Image 1 (spheres, rainbow, N blue to C red):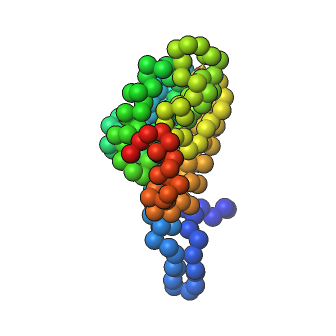
Image 2: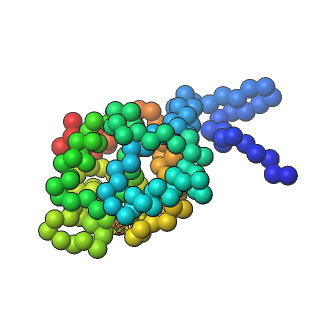
Length: 180
Ligand code: SF4
C-alpha cells in the first residue's frame, strides 16, 4: 500500500531525530497549504470555479475551503470572468485592500487577455490594472486547470522568500502599476 504523507517536507537537513530548515521554508509551507482565496467571479469562468469547489474536485483538499469575500482576510485573489473597463478600478481597489503577502491567479481567457471580447468595453487582460502571478488559459478552463493554476501559486508561495515582497524587484513591479 502506498505510504501517505500529509505535506512534503521543505528542503533541509535531516538526520536521526532531527530536521533543520530555514524559517522561510516553514512559513512558505504553512502559507501554501492555508491560502484564503477571494473569488472575484463575474461570468461563466466563475461557474467553473463553483464546480472546482464542489465535492467532485473538492478544493478543500488544499486547505482552502474558506472563501473570503473580505479582501482584508484573503491572500489569493482569483479573477474569473470577463472584466469590463468599468470594473477595472473596482478590481484594483479590491487588490489594494488585500494585505501582503498576496498572490493573483487569472482564470480563463477573458481575465488573461479579454478573450473573445476584443471590444471597446472589455479590459484586455487584468494585468492592465494589477500584477498577475499565474495565468490559467482556456474558455472556460476545466476545474483540473484551475487546480493546476492554484498548485503553481502554491509552488511560488513555498519557494519565495518571506522578504521577497520587500525586494527592489517587487517594489518596481508595484510602482509600474502606480501602487504604493
Ligand atoms: S473565458 Fe470563456 S468561459 Fe471564461 S468568462 Fe470568458 S467567455 Fe466565459
